[in-house]
Length: 296
Image (cartoon, rainbow, N blue to C red):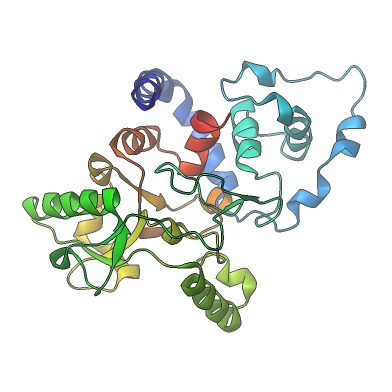
């Protein structure tokens, strides 16, 4: 199934990107540079939809391949708040949950062990979830002792580091799996120091962190701290190569409106080669990919 999705995506992307990018991309980037309002979800609902004139034109949302019939009323309401959005944007963003404020209308993930698990500000892991197959990252590729990932991700990270070395670059793991309690302590400290609003832009609330999945790893090179990784030659190599090893760079510039997080060039997420290649080819966030190709 993943290979069928990947083939379809790559063929569709090649045909569509030329026609769409010049108009659509600039509009999307312009609208996504600002964070989502924490109160945006409060102005949506059936009252707005029912206020539409009876003869109002209704967009054909069902023409979108990733249309979900159960969300029709939400699509309608969201389109009233964002009349400049394309049908694709409306369906995608509502599927993600962006018609609600971050950390509202959240769901507990039912299959946290799935390699393709989507953990974001609308989908949380069970508090007591600990991956059953955690292993330590190879010492030679780790800048911290005891750094752990799930087995498949750890093996892929070793291959990534080897590939970087062959190209003349050095990449180390700086932070991998974190327990719920560790993330809670980190987040609470950040919130106490910088305030909840600011902390939410760079730190996940406990239960909502990809690090708890055991599939995310923060990286650095040999000379700078991890949060300066985006300034390094290693990053220039990584941004066009990590997908070959099954990783994506999860939080990129101009996507804070979708992910809720500032750019983190150092945060790699393992999703497998097929999915990583598709996300890279499409040039979208993992949230958008899941909303279009994995949600049912």
